[in-house]
Each structure stands twice: as C-alpha cells, then as structure tokens.
Length: 397
Image (cartoon, rainbow, N blue to C red; front, side, top):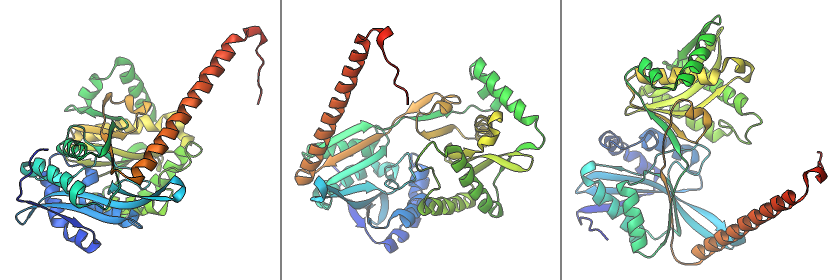
C-alpha cells in the first residue's frame, strides 16, 4: 500500500444539517478541481439527496488538512435483501445513483495538491474504520483517476473481493472554433443530409429556435419538455423520464439553479409559435452535457431531433465550449454528430462473509442460467439448419 500523510483527517457527515454546512467548502472545491463534473456540483448532489435520500443513510467522507477541507466523497448506505430476504446487505453507494435519474461522471472533489493522498486515506478509512458496509457498489468512476486507482489497490491489498469493469460507452466530441469548421469536418454525406434537413425546416413559416433565458419562461418550458419526452418515448420504454414525482421535482429545482448560474441550456425548436422539440443540456467548465430531449412525432417528417441537435452543437460552439458530451448510451443518432467515445468504471467490492457468499451464489446461478439459455439457442439454430428448406413450416402468430 502507498503511504498517506498522517496530517490528513477523515470524518463522516451523516446529518443533513451538517451536509448544508459543507456548501462553502463544496463550492470552493468545485472551482479548484479541474476534473469535477456537473454531477458532483453542489446543486446536483444536494437536490438529489433532497428528492431521493429517503430511507437511505447519508455518509459523506470529508478529508481535512489541518482545518481546511481538501477532499469530499459523497456516499450513502442502503439495505438490500438477498437469499430470499434471509440476508440483509448493507450497500455503500454514491450520491446520485440509485434513483431514476442517472449521472455519468462521479467520484470525489479534491484540491489537486492533496488528491492522491486524500484518495488513499479515504480508501483506507472505508476499509479499516468505516465498517458499516458489506458491499461497495460504485459506478461512473473516471478510468485511471487517482480515486479509482487508490480504491482498487487498497481494496485488493486488504483481501476483499473486487470487481472493476468498464461501464456503458459515452459518446462525445471535441468542438472546433466555428460551426463552419465543424461542418467541414463531417463526412460529405452527413454534411449534405444535415444541411438538407435544416434548410427544409427553415423554409417553413414560423420556423426558428428559442433558448430559455429567464425564470418566467422556465415553468412552461419544463412542462413542455416533459410532454415532448413522453410523446417521443410513448410505447418505446416502460418508464420514460419525468414519470415520477422525484424525477420531476429534482429536475425542476435543478433547472432553476442552473439558470441562475448561467449553466442551463434548454433549447426549443419552434414552428408557427409552437414548440415541437426540446433539448435539455447543461454547460459546465467548457463542456456541453446533453441530458434529455423530446419531440412531437406528429412533426417527424421534418426530422426535429436531428435539426435541433445541430442547433445545439452550433450553440455550444458559439458559447465557447470545447467538448460536446452526449453522456451515457451508445445510440446511433449520437454517432451522427460525434464518433469519439469513452468509458468509466464500475467498481464493486465485498467484505468476506455471508453477504459475499450470497452474491457469489447469485452470480453463479446467473452464469448457469445464461449458459443454459445460450446452449438451447444454439441447439435450436442447429436443428433449424438441419431441416431442408422446402420442409420448414411457417409458424404464424
């Protein structure tokens, strides 16, 4: 194990009132940590806990050097039942995951000069002193970050069972200095397709875009975004965004905070005085984060999704962004605009004992089930191939 300076002191914040007292230090670390994401911002984290923290136990790790806060690691504990409810697993997770709204880049906030030492000290504290968890279940850790390296090394050195795997791909792109340069960098076919769709839309009466810039516009724009999202995904997913009171309450308040800080990018596609598509994005430290969207399928002939995404990319370029982050989900429409991708890490660790045994059994049974399913699928394919084509029967619904 690497050495961590004894001057660092680790404590745990478990009370909401003490959480609130951290705000000045939190915001200060945000501004100084070049790698911090919008999902680790004070607004996101505090509002997530307000709307999703029920029946969970707050566990924010705080690293101090002398009296100064030099690191924050926002966590919580929740209970999961295994083995038919016979075993209760105490799972340690990150604030921001576990609800129905998903962040992409988590971890901690650190002063750069103390980051390595604070990560090692926090990892050791979680292993040796904070023994109230059976399973550590973390996601969205930056690959190669000091926190990911320290956790993986210290957990393995302590003899815990550790799994560290890449998470779902995240599509992104580096933005040039102008919209014209961005277009020149596209393939000829894609450039012509996008240009044709935009010209078709702009030729319509009352066609244009609108960016929410005032609080008086926000309430109506929020409701329209929720409606357009439901229209877009109706019948395509069991639970689209904006379906629960927690999701709606969280994002309504988050948007208000983002707007006040100049970070909200709520862009609408307008046609004849009606908003037919919307993109909900956030701008943070030179990065445009595309979070949510929706459009009215009644206007699908005008390709509102592609047209509006083009306008969003142009807006990000004009406002000086260096990265356009499509966030999690390797969807084809994202590849129409950007081709770069990255992957964060999912890290799980288990203390030895009944909980670890229950999870091992669950994993083994799942492996057997998947193997049997694959075997049956292969046997069925071979059997179908063995029947002469002229003798196969059609099975009609």
